[in-house]
Image 1 (tube, rainbow, N blue to C red):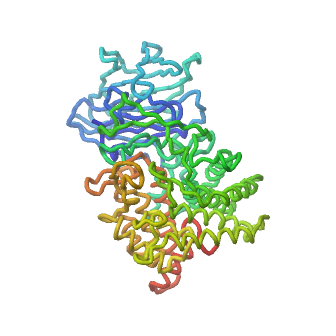
Image 2 (image 1 turned 90 degrees about the vertical axis):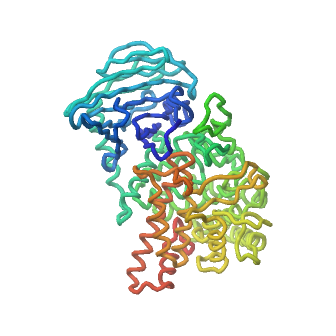
Image 3 (image 1 turned 30 degrees about the vertical axis):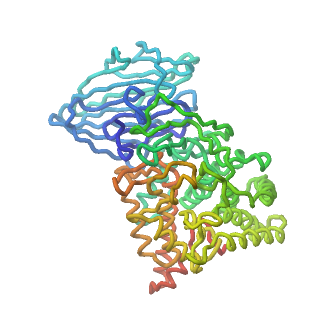
Length: 620
């Protein structure tokens, strides 16, 4: 059975990433890219579906782990009755391309002597492709179709009838035993050996140099920095695209069917990610992400998708993998994501908001970004009244989702602000008329006067956690009674044990069986909303409670089950980690603004909150 999701740590090289369990097993790795087929897939099945274990032979060994400072280098320490040893796992940030990917594991003796073992189960094609393995150079070599893998280690490794490679060794204090796994295309003549100890030094230096750029300070700096490092590991360096997560099909509910492939880039993440990067000082990464956005959506606006592949690929065909039993029997396992074919109107607003954020932070203008934005708004004007699948990508009937319409309002609002504030040329008065029309329709059709709340879609009675974003996006002021009523309705209906659920999952609404866990990003949105309405102390308490949900390495998945205390959903989740950075920055600014005002009255706290709304202030 797979380890709990919170038992995993991530290592990566900005091309792909691996998940390493607390017990020393690499249970998930796709090569050579995030969205390639896996070579280790025990996460979604059993060890026979692929893994690489390095652990003490003593089953009673105790383990602890941490990252080596502000880096992506993972250290897992084991203690036995005879001694202590540490497994150092990393993927080099060496500047190499996709023609070779290295994964390095160093076993360092810390005290006494520790008997260790390793077990390597190579399975390509998501757990079913058994490679041809033979002895070669300093370790076994494996070939399967387009893939070749070479291991280098001084430890003797041998095959078993179970098509597994195994080895046993002892590490003493002061010794360090290296293991290098190198992937390369099988049609190449071979791989390039690089000294693992040199790579450790260079990789640590590169991580520390990168982390030093972070300009956000304060009491939550550790959480911010770990989230930024995680976002860096979710970045595909050649294009600047950022994947939503490194995994597919980790369930939103154990045993359920809400299992999706998140190894792609969503436009919806654009604004929140850009804000996190820019507010922390990472202009190079923000620029690369913006350029990815421009390339991905280039073309006729009618062909814009809500998500793309790492390099902007459009065809993300979804299919099921029946030979994998799924994480703790959560079926089906899906590859690809059919949501790329959906109409989700909110992405137009998110895209316009992203470009506007770049302007606010002084990122140099792209020569054709404004032309593209005008084309997008021209097309949106023709389609904004259509029903869609909404930001939660429901697989039921299309509806007039409130958040989708509000984001159409945001799209024209940001176009208007770009003209008024930055001198760009466009149909200002016409866009103002369209914005007013959309806004009035939302107020007329999406607000339930009886309940004093906005609702999930026109005519609905339920609320939706996305409505918490309305004041942050400037649709209405934070102190508007309708916003306060909506926040109260979300607290009544969707908050359980302090955590926020996205919406009431009914088959009639989203076309799937009921049931999922609390959505972590939505819980951060509630913290922001509380701060915006003057409830600063409550916001900070909620934020710090959410930070406590992170695993011991500071990582978050998509969802959290308050009953079991377990993380669920794909992992680690970019949406959750951008929420940490943005909420921490938001709360820190409120705290600073309130302190500067002297006496912290409720009205002053509210004013400070409104002046520092994230990601975009409504009054800009």
